[in-house]
Amino acid sequence: MKLQAGSLACTVLLTMVMSLCNAQQITGVWKGRISSKKVELKLIKSGDSLVGTSYYYDSRNNYRRYTIKGYFDPSTNNVIWWDDQLIENKSSGRSNASENALLSVADFNCPGEDEMRLDGTTSLRDDKEIARNPVNLLKVGSPVFPDEWDFVIDNYTSGTNDPYFIDSINRLRSTPAIREEELVVAVPIGIDMPNNPAPVVTAPDPKPALPDPADNTVAAKAPGNLESKFTSRKKVLQNVIPVTGKMIELRFYDNGIIDGDSIAIFFNGALLHENIRLALEPFVIQLPTNELQDDNELVMVAQNLGTIPPNTSMMVVEMGNKTYEARLYANENSSALVRFVKNAPGNSSR
Image (cartoon, rainbow, N blue to C red):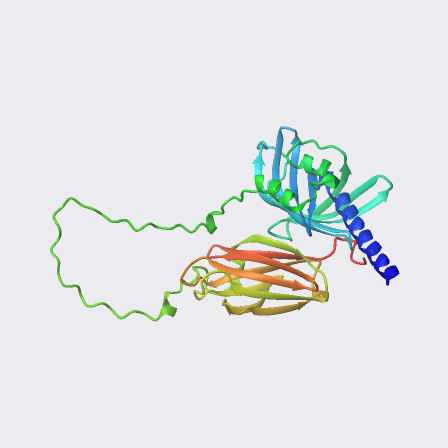
């Protein structure tokens, strides 16, 4: 029994050491090119996720900077990251710095003893079919752009790998920009206090009969048929989820007051389900992963905004032993986009 306990302790210790080693390897400064654009990427592993920042630049004084989010799977060496919020824009009109947020999928590999690389492909964050270009990045020792992440990277094995500490640094520069189509303006009810004499009070006219509550729902103002709504509305990325396991289970709930929201789900451009009424009980969809492409797009289209626009949904994703959540927002101008990404190119056999 003592021998078994000792063996178990050694196994646990070895697993912890290997996990820290993998995190240390992916954490750092990466430089190179995405297509023709010069890029500096700072990746920090925090729990199961990646955070950090990306710089697309022509020079030290001519660049665009984003916060990034992502995932790293040490079992496959698959790395996914995407530009989340634009936090600095110091690019000129003729700059080659990226003008659009990107999503990249790469293979983490070590072709030489002292060489670590990220090789893969990129596309526009909100459309996987546009700007597909190669990613070629090399891990380096020092950055071109000093920032708040350098201290975390330099001291990663000495305590700054704590997820709470990393999250506190991430919040310093992660104030999201408010998209115009997501604004919900609260109109205050004012009370006029005129100086004029009080009006003569007359008996009110009989009140009309109240409509059925279902009639209070706000129909999405868009072209009539569902396919037109799908193609005409802007698709806004809400989350990116790495694909693992053999089956994906999607569960859709109302993310607020139950007010009659209904949605349609498109997957890779094809209608999957329509007239889904969001409620406390989930609407469940299952997808076998062996039928998926390497990069897949799920789009939630608002069919009915309910009595309280916009349309909000909580999507819970179950894959094997992994659980992800995505809060989805849609209205008559935009639809919610979630990308499901499999292995990096050339990495599917792992």
